[in-house]
Amino acid sequence: MARKTEPATTGSVRMGPISIFTLVIVICLAVMATLALTTARADTALAERQASFTADDYANECLGQAFLAEVDAALASARAAGLGPAEAAAALAEELDNLAARAKDTAAADGHTLQAQADGNAISVRVDAPSGRTLTIGLAVTSNGELAISYWKPSTTWTEDTSDTLWMGA
Image (cartoon, rainbow, N blue to C red; front, top):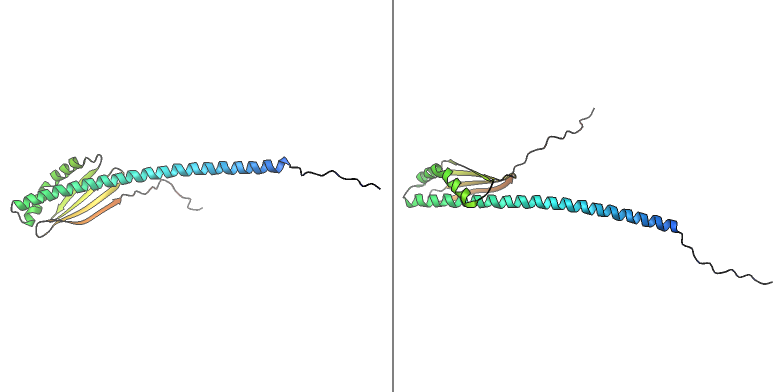
């Protein structure tokens, strides 16, 4: 009896599972690309906002330093004129608006505001940027007629957004 030999079978590849697998991979890649693009745009917006805040901080610092230089120069000329600490502080209080205007011209900080108030030997200064960044400075005329910095605080003015209302229940 002769044996029948069967031809060697080669494995057949079915296109159905490979097509579905390829489709799933393409969809995953499309989702990942969309998420990457969205994240990149959000990172760009955050970086631009941070850059704007940093620029405002530096402009506030520049304006504060210019004001400090103006006050220190006025205090030095008051000491050279022989005024005591109390008289020098009173002279500074009278010239505060002029000193603030000169500092603003020197620093050329567009849109920034500088407010200075004198209370005895203490001077409080507030520098505001349009973005809400604020620099608060405290100066004092010491007993030997020199200028001392009490505090130098940058901060941000925060306003709460209450336009959205949450569901409070039934």
